Amino acid sequence: MSRSFRLIVASVAILALGILASGQHGVSAKFDPTKPQTLKGTVTQVDWANPFTHIILKVPAASGLPVRWAVELESPILLARNGWSETTVQPGDTVTVQGFLARNGTKQISGNSVLLARTNKNVLVGYNGTAPPKRTAAAEPAPRWPDGHPRLGPTAGHTGYWGNPSKTALVQDGATVQMDASGLLKNIADVDKVAPFQKWARDVYELRQKDFLAHDPMFLACKPPGGPRQFQLVYGVQFLEDTDHKRVFVLMGGGNRNERIMYTDGRAQKGQLRGDDDNPLYYGRAVAEWTGDTLVSDIKGFNEKFWFDNGGLPHTDQLHLVERFTRTDMNTLKYEVTIDDPGAYTKKWTASWTLQWIPDEELPYFLCEDNRP
Image 1: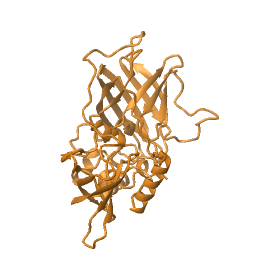
Image 2: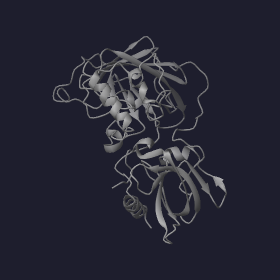
Image 3: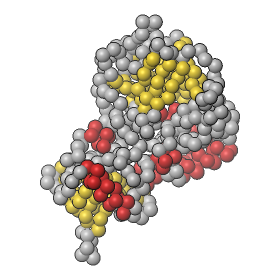
């Protein structure tokens, strides 16, 4: 059977079970952590594709007729980092799965533990959707270009990218707020600590949080992760420094394999004629310059079609960002951002975190949609 045909069959089966195959989502948006469920059944299909891998189970029922269930796992990339492959679980295997029921009442659960009967081993134990720790490069000073500026990318003959962000949602510096990896507040009463909201923006943020981030446009419609969000995602970013043309490309491992450009040629902070002069963008228009060892990027011209962080903070087309990138050593990139949006916030505010250098690897090849109808 061809791969294309298998993917079509798997997709039809998943759609028949009511799975939202139109995009990614946060786990809490789809599954209810207050409703645990354990299933034991026979695997009939394994759909190894982005944005989520699915195991289709045939589960015995009291009526005598088996019931089909779908078990949703993480993307193939994150599963592979956890030791999985396409053959870890195969059609015909008997498995016992623990997870949480889907909020919409369909026959789906999240896969938090998968016990494989033929080996009597849990092949998915305690996996929470985040990448396991990765090796780092040797502890060395930041590499530099001949002009003395730190290199944001790899040295000649090597490769690598930045991943494992120390924070995965925006919170103003100085505030202590507990969130999960998707930016969902542990305590909804902490809303006012997150940012200096205007009233309408606070209400929108609180609503998105209470809705478990279910209407995230990046998940529902594969909208690009503009603003600081691109530096919050698990699949990482890569910098390509085009010194000849005085520009820096930021390549993203997730989403739709998007890229953005920061120009370092001294141009004015405005749209280009016959280009984007009157067209608000997902990544805005960025002009940048080096200040000592820090690349400072000034960005304006955003549209309002995306969420600019994982937690659902709102913004308007007045959003103005100033980003600071400082490679403090071989393994650490400090990211600082100043948010100035008088349409949504009462004052300027800042947030910061670090990313880790992942040596000798290319960006993971994750697409928001992979062979989905």
